[in-house]
Image 1 (spheres, one colour):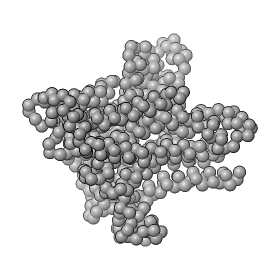
Image 2 (cartoon, each protein chain N blue to C red):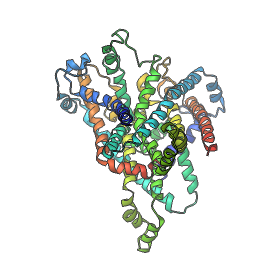
Image 3 (cartoon, rainbow over the protein chains, first blue to last red):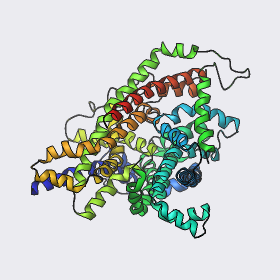
Image 4 (cartoon, each protein chain N blue to C red):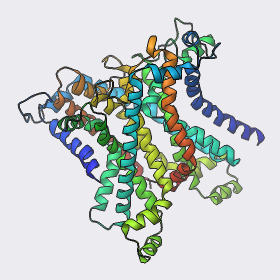
Length: 274
Length: 281
């Protein structure tokens, strides 16, 4: 039995190491001195922490691209989360006709390669609205990327809440809005965290739409920039690209680390029970 | 509320469906003409469409088993970790890749596999299995490219899918496994007859969803392979994108038809899978 437990932990740790090692490698690359970075040795002879300072001050468009990414991502997360809360609420408690139809269309869209097929028409719409090559124009298509799954998650979460609670709050004189804000939102924080994180991850790293709908370096978001540069010499030398990478990965991991308790509760409460 | 969903998902899909029956182009003043099934007829005899679909299918076959079975194994192992802190630490580390956006994953692995600077080749050379001349060329359209992409996609989904299976495992009553143990079932039998049937719903959902995402992969291919038609990463999705946005002709109507052919082929398989999984309940 002892060896069994040992083997089990060994296997788990083996997989965990595979997950963590590539990220550690990039972290290490971002603090290597130039000669070490290009010789390929895993552990550098000499560390150099100046790359971070370099990328934020010396690459002209980078702060701009960072700002673009932050604005687009935050707007997307807020809009989608609010939409998902309202839609999920309506789908569970409002006895409106066509509820089943809406739910089936949303579910069906999960199985359909929506983003891919709609791309051509989205380009057309954006051109018609004059939103090509505009950073803020990316927000409406981004909102839809995860809207269906977000609404379904919120619906699953709302369904866990006993009806008696809603009725009680009605008796106490709360309208539908009061019930939602005072009674339901505090109870569904976990689910909201899951929805927000899912949307954050998608919007923060979206590539296809951003690459298709924008052209100018100054308008683009970080993922497009990162995917188009490949470590060479000069401005985009290897350790510098790696430093940009670490700056991009950190917010996601930080949010997750801070909110992980709520996130796991949200996952088990309903997000995985679709 | 539904404005976004209708405006940017339902309408575009129908609009693309309409385009696929016309000779539509963005940059033309005359209105598009209705050409009936011409686009579809041309696409169905276009060899690039077939190779594209086959390549996507090949990738799916490489990717699906690993992305389903490894997380299942890992979930069964982690579920038995009794030390609570350790168990939650394992979960947190597992989910790290799930909070890294796709593009960042792709660039990370583009570096990992890199011929000159990538640590994978460095380690292979240090181990003495290859020299600097014979080290494998992972990316750039060799036969190794699709397996390499499949491998890191498995890496990416490992933690997230493990969570699905852990949620499935959590719903199995403890009495059931205890009772089976008392009846003398060994661990293997326990897994096969007690755990496995209860994981089937999770398993089938994951298979269907991952099949869909694997067949319609495009960003990875654009980042890794570009528009080289000889590369195994030039699948139907890339062909569609290439026709619609890159090649000078801008044949959006034709591209729309290819998109719909690919999507219809996928939907047939998805429908078949849903039917199969449903009938077993």
